[in-house]
Image 1 (cartoon, helix red, strand yellow):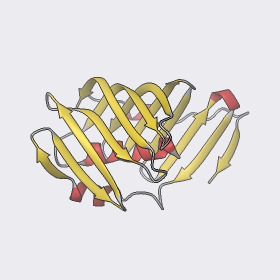
Image 2 (spheres, rainbow, N blue to C red):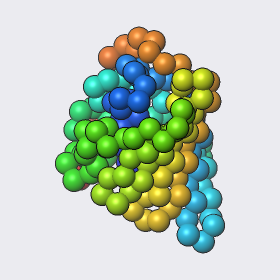
Image 3 (cartoon, rainbow, N blue to C red):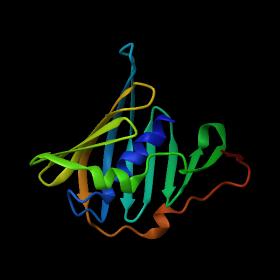
Length: 171
């Protein structure tokens, strides 16, 4: 569930009017801090393209690939040989967040949707950070390092290949 909220934030970022982002690629560090101060750190790389395609390749502490295509999410977890297939039906409405994202200053935009406030920061006209508090009251910060914006990304990058021997969970 923690991963899902991060994907939704990026979908907002890619579709938002604040900056004209057609595609985005960057290494990232995601920190999740619970209400007891416990911190979990994830690192990986992200590729994303309009209208709603993203691939989050988590590398540490576990390897996991998360594909977001339109209203579908495919999560491939090699360590447990499992694939989870989900829809985004009950999740945050991307268009609603986009329409509500408001410029706070030159580099900061905020949207509040379904009680969650999303803050998007830019540095040198490139996304640098997304932060929010998720539905579990965890503070989530995603920092992008060496971002590249509006470079073509092959559409095949966003098509998951599911190994035949993996368990498939639909949810």
